[in-house]
Structure formats: C-alpha cells, structure tokens
Image (cartoon, rainbow, N blue to C red):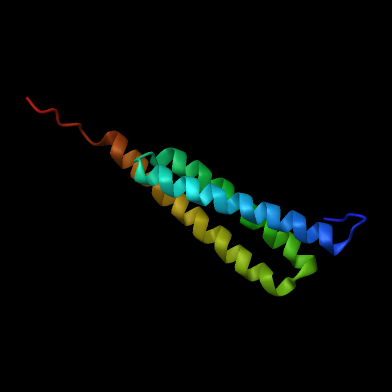
Length: 99
C-alpha cells in the first residue's frame, strides 16, 4: 500500500481490513450458532483472505507481524474446512421425523 499520506494511510487501510475480518468472524460464529455451517465457512474463508492480505502488507511495514498473520490465515483456513466438513455431515445425516 502506498499513499501520499504515507504510513498513516497504510495503518488506516490495515485497520479497515482487520476490522472487516473481525466482523466476518463474528458473523461466522453467529452462523455456526444458527447451524448454518456452509455460510459460516464462507465468512471464515473471507477472514482468512484478509489475514493473508495483512501478512503481505506487514511484510514491508512491520515484518515481525508477518508470521503472526500467516498463522492466523492458516488457522482460519482449518476452521473453515472443519465448518464445511460439519455442513457436509449434517447434509448427509438422515432427518428423523416424529410420528
């Protein structure tokens, strides 16, 4: 990221990406609570992409944060995969109807 305002604009952009990812994770948790695992996985994937962007941004501005954001992205990818697996398991499970 490069802007005439320099590092201030870079920091504001990084914060906007971070805040959006946090909102996506909150939505994902709400979707999980509602049993909508596939939709939650999509939100978590988006938050993982944001962490990857933050890793790339921090590489030039704060290199010590880059490994952190790579770990966050990897953890979110694993979480999204677990949500997708759970959604798939739910879809193939027979529904019992009370007689």
